Image (cartoon, rainbow, N blue to C red):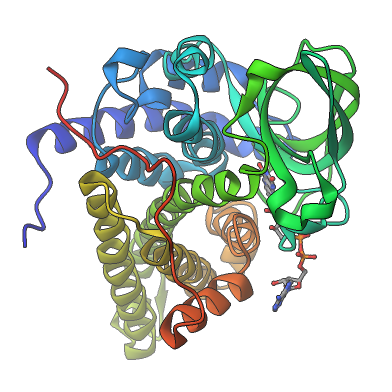
Length: 396
Ligand SMILES: Cc1cc2nc3c(=O)[nH]c(=O)nc-3n(C[C@H](O)[C@H](O)[C@H](O)COP(=O)(O)OP(=O)(O)OC[C@H]3O[C@@H](n4cnc5c(N)ncnc54)[C@H](O)[C@@H]3O)c2cc1C
């Protein structure tokens, strides 16, 4: 077993950290104003972060899946809104196209995404269906060389700024979840409109919104996978998105821990630094335990991806644990800050608001818990897929 990061990983971590530190001063204002900065996303693309684990032949940096975790972790150390871009653009969307797309789709869509020239997202959730994916109502009806796409998506990250949407809709409702198909939809297609959700608890420096598809003609060549493979595609995309959420949560938990440690050495009560009180030490000790166990689960999942091993269970476990650790660390960091933690003067209240969402998106706590129970009981078994996510190999 090798728990070490390579020199390449360490260099990457330093460069993401430096980038995130430059962006950090803007975050509190954006968060207060409930607005986002598209230029920051474009800069992430210019730095190569958006294609970090995409092979060089498709415009990416050709780094491994551990690197994707490192980028996610370091971005969320500063703010969740930055990591969300990695989750939807790279995790849920680009890696889905890498796994399931045709060579033409990889050239036309994946390459500009990996180069950061186009921003993409993943549109599954609908007003009446989140956890219950088979409950979506969007339809794509074949008409010659096109599908006519009709439906509404909501709670879609980057809805108002992405150029492309990996979208899921029924091509045959009678087949239940086996009748869902996946499509790449461009913002410029006739009948696409989007809007933002203005009042959210967290990820306020990021964009979340809705997409309306009003009889949108989508070329047949934009269908990803076969008709009816959409549900499988959506689920395997989650294997990668959840990995970035889990890694990001480690970053948020570390930010909460660092803020708490700093404050515990500054603030005095009863004549000593509050860090000297054993009950405060206990809160910090629990943070350390959570962060280090989450890190192990996250990077084990990254290692499995590098080997080309199926990692649905392990990634879901990492996501479930890491997001709960982040939530608890942020909560305890507020406790350690006392009343100041309850104000916007310190970042810990933002961490707490941001951590909360990750226990809802990409599979709620309850869905993760059910999955682990079902795997343990043998009710859930992963079958081989027609197309697997490629194992990582160093670029030549
Ligand atoms: C900030 C943010 C960003 C998001 N970004 C995206 C995105 O980019 N793309 C996208 O497609 N979606 C996105 N989502 C949507 C997200 O994935 C869904 O909100 C999530 O899957 C839960 O669905 P729901 O909100 O409809 O809740 P529901 O599915 O209605 O669940 C409501 C409650 O019931 C529980 N529940 C449901 N079914 C069961 C069950 N079988 N057993 C036990 N409990 C159950 C849930 O755990 C939850 O507590 C985002 C959401 C947020 C908050």
